Image 1 (cartoon, rainbow, N blue to C red):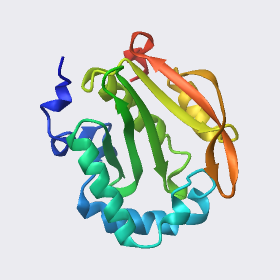
Image 2 (image 1 turned 90 degrees about the vertical axis):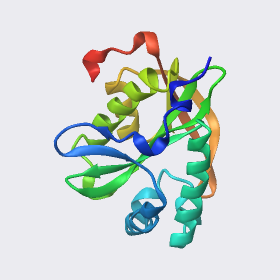
Image 3 (image 1 turned 45 degrees about the horizontal axis):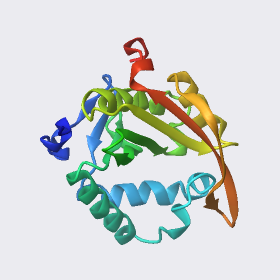
Length: 194
């Protein structure tokens, strides 16, 4: 059985959320603004994101986006930039899509000054709906550091259940970090959460 997204180009899937927020498919033209945003938030983002210390130029971001676009073209990833009040404010996507088992993992980051406005929660709600309805996933996951209370709270608000802790699952800032594994089945997703 083919996924619906095998028939839909990534570039056609802008996801409107509300009057102030939408998800725009990532494109090469986002290389510079994403690099600038991540670079200006480097100390904030590096606490939980291992790639930040490897990002030293706009070319890094461009190469990353080129790899994302290839995975998107094969239906293994769907990545968007978060646009809030007309400003690019972060990135979100469904990664590591296992088409056979219909599983995807949500990942995101947002600028520090955009925290506390519900942007990521609203974006994740829309992405979960997109994952279940359009990509036809059966299970979605959110992994976050056991000390990352903000990301864990997002998973809980959306109805994800903590399945367990992946011990030393990520190498970050010179040490191994335990990750909470949160999962949500399509059958447990409620459109009331949308």
